[in-house]
Length: 382
Image 1: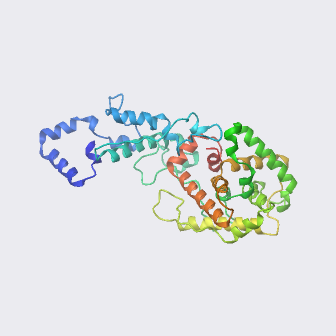
Image 2: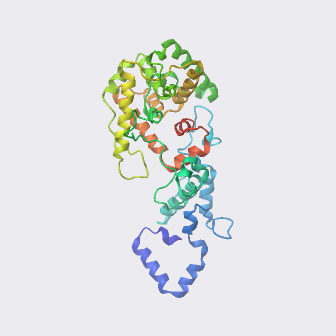
Image 3: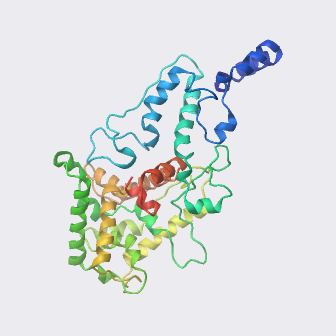
């Protein structure tokens, strides 16, 4: 197995030729089962433990995996905070004290070996779990079983923005709104105060939700829609309308009028090329948001009743706490003036987070540790 991780090709070739030329050495190497990785097992996401073995043969690698990946590290999309705003749940439950691990070695093959074997084990526990594949994806594939060496890994990106020609309007606005830096929601709550208050997350969410319901009614946000159409458009319309009815509406209007912030970020981490359809689709979604915000005519959507207002405000409370655009904007406002450039930054940073959440590992981990029906809801509760 060490031969697999040599970075110096000349040495690798020399060792290979020596093994092939020496019959006794060749036989000895073949008998050393613990010295090789079974690629068939790797392709099927099987454990690294060799046949008839109870554990990995290398004690240092066992310790490394026990301290990192097998210590729930495979679940973490980022290192858990040392001073969290509120109790952690989902994949981060019981994660307090988890930290980075530094490895030092004089062997040149160690970095590649560690990167390959440790990342494989993390991928095996996430992507390799058949439960990470949705029912729709299972129907679209010949088999529901994931394979390591398939050309394109699964699960596939969930935050996509392609617009079909036959569509009258963009259909992924719920995904898009995660990149919208809503000023009203950013100003509504600052989680840093909870480092002292220590309120449970359910109580925080309930208080935000109640305040939003009260404000929804006092601002009469139903005035912005015709009453005809799908009321569930409010999942993405509500943040725009709260800003439209607030005191900062001139700044948002100025920012939106600039058009979508420039970015070369790819939404699909598995592709080395920029997807022109995705980029143009994201711009179409942005322009649709501009129309909803700026149009003096009422938007075609149903007016909300009390029960629906409660449902939408519950969603807005999740956005207030977990939207990447809102979290970034809220954090930066502590140190910077509110300008269109800051809103650009919030949009682009949140777009980068959507790309992170489009990675197969991220999708698998989010699905395995959340219960929301839709992926954007799962992400908000991660």
